[in-house]
Image (cartoon, rainbow, N blue to C red; front, top):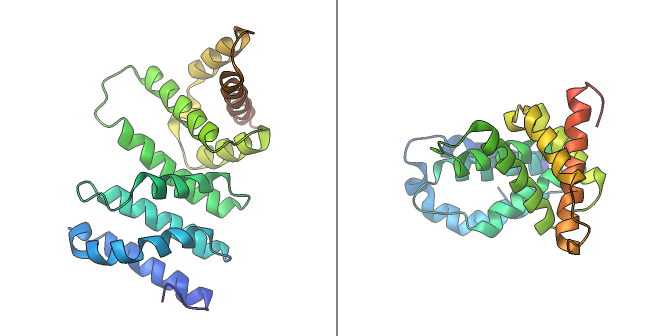
Length: 203
């Protein structure tokens, strides 16, 4: 069904797998199946049908959420699905944003640091991710902020980190190399999007 020509059949198959992965001990029960078809599921995050692609991103997120030990998802497949946050279609971006929120929470689970420090580190991780994919310009930053804001990614609402990021940008060392300057520009793009959202203006 994952290879069916009919988009409704493909979407139904993906949704059925979402339900299956919500059952207890799903990774062990579905481990062999997942290893066999994970490549196809990842491929479907770029399906020509928006709803199929969005639901496939959600399925990858579901697998990531429950797969704590067997590590069915390698880093490349996680990153490929997270990168859908740059997709021009809002429905796909939003599912990727939910996955990104889940991913960030897993990275900082049990972390006892100050909340503001964690929020800034999350922002830095988003910037690093954009930089790794050579994402440039304000449009990509707008996509990221718009998608993550709408699903309630609380680290974006931290006004102090916005101020800190702006101050860091204003104190940029002119001798920084191109890579560091690119990250500064990406950070500024994210901050600009956050400030627009905080003022109830479209990004």
